[in-house]
Structures are given as structure tokens and as C-alpha cells.
Picture 1 (spheres, rainbow, N blue to C red):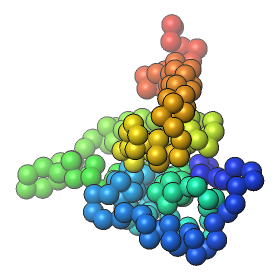
Picture 2 (picture 1 turned 135 degrees about the horizontal axis):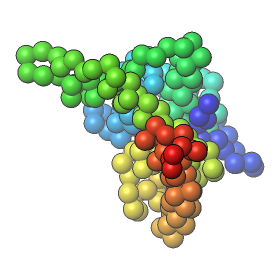
Picture 3 (picture 1 turned 90 degrees about the horizontal axis):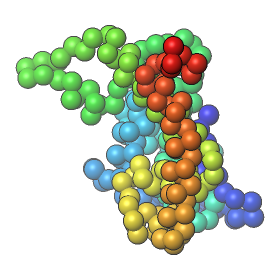
Picture 4 (picture 1 turned 135 degrees about the vertical axis):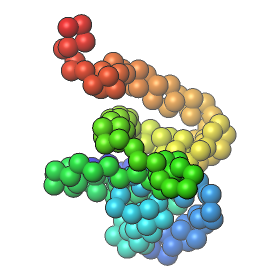
Length: 206
């Protein structure tokens, strides 16, 4: 299961009133970064992006712990990733094969005057590739808390100095973490490429 950003040892956990204050600072207006992130993760959830975000907010205010120094956006992004991953794995355990598409993706499939019906094998292939990509992202996120924060920040659309500020680090430290992420991604690429081609590791040269 993908876990939300967790506090390093020795870092103080925020009191409930401090978490509430962090939630109030999060921009949740239409088109905001956190709503875009919710829509991105909603494909694994049994509702829309707003429903996923609402569940994350409830978790943030009740059962989840947050450390000082983690922004409200980071906290909510981690919780949403955890909820979505749990929902996907539960569906897999039940043997469900149906693909759940975010609203914006579904809208793109709409034709003028009605819906465009996508072939079942195409939907299954889209879902297979999506799950493969999510697995890679989870592997990269699990390498370190900072790397997970970096990936979440990129998912929020942050770049350069804004991304460094979001992570609470310098631009030099950001460059170091990005290089580490790139090196790990390159190591994972061969198997990822085989997965995209739907080829078993030992069958590439067959």
C-alpha cells in the first residue's frame, strides 16, 4: 500500500489544531493544484476527484498524523495516494477487472451528440499500462520520504524554485534529489519497457 508522507524520527507531530490550520491554508479553488492531483488519482477510487479529496481531508482531521514542516498539499496528496492505492488493491483482491476512468478522461471519449464507445480490449490495455506506471511511481516514491515529496510536488505541477520551496530545500539539494530519482528511474526502465510491450523478461530475444 502506498503510504502518505511520514515524519522523520525526532520530528514533532502537529497538534490537531495545527493540522486544521494547515488545511485552511490549502488552495481548493477550481483548477487548483490539489484538485488536479485528486483528479489524477481518482482513477483508482470509487468516486470523483472531489470525493477522494474529501476522504483525504476527513483522514487528515481525524486519524492521520502529520509532522511539522510538511505542507497541507503534501499531506493531502500522500493520503489520497494511500486511499487510491488501497482501493485499487482491494479491487484486485476481489478479482474485479473493470477499469475506472477519471471524469476528464471520460469527457475526452465523448463524441458530438453522444458517447464514443471504446473497444473493451482498448480499455483493458489502457488500464494495464496505467497500473504499470502507477507501480513504477510507487517504487520510486518508496525510496525515501524526500523522493516521495518530490514526486508529489511534480504531480502538483511545481517546478524549479517553487518545487524547492514546496520541499523546504535549496535548489542544489533539489538537483541532487532529482538526479537520484533519474538514476533509479533509469535502472527500472528495462523492465518497465518490457512491461509496456507486454513481454516477459526472458522472452525479449525469443
